[in-house]
Length: 163
Image (tube, rainbow, N blue to C red; front, side, top):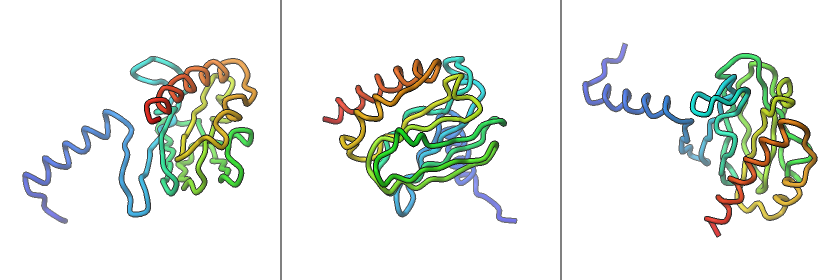
């Protein structure tokens, strides 16, 4: 068993505290790893059936790690909301899933059992100009449409700030 020094213990405790306060972003050798939790409830907003965060800004080569934080969820890419040549994915219920993004663009996704409750999200990868408008126009229903309105409003602000 490896023994930690007091300093190492404090560093680990600080890192653990940071990881509990917000989804983490880890810089990997080939790109960043963005973690998205699948949640029954957002503790900050009180919203039920959410991805946390539901909007991620990434770069080509980054990995998206979907964490099965709460049981009963999965993640599925929306075929109408990915760029040409982009990777599609479909996780199983309660499965943690990693997807490495190799094509720039906007990617919409959802939780299959909870899409009607608005459990949706958006990943913006690199230059999204190739499909962002089309993704915004993709047909949504019910609570998913309402959640996407909020997500796209925040995405528009983010992209405008980058311009």
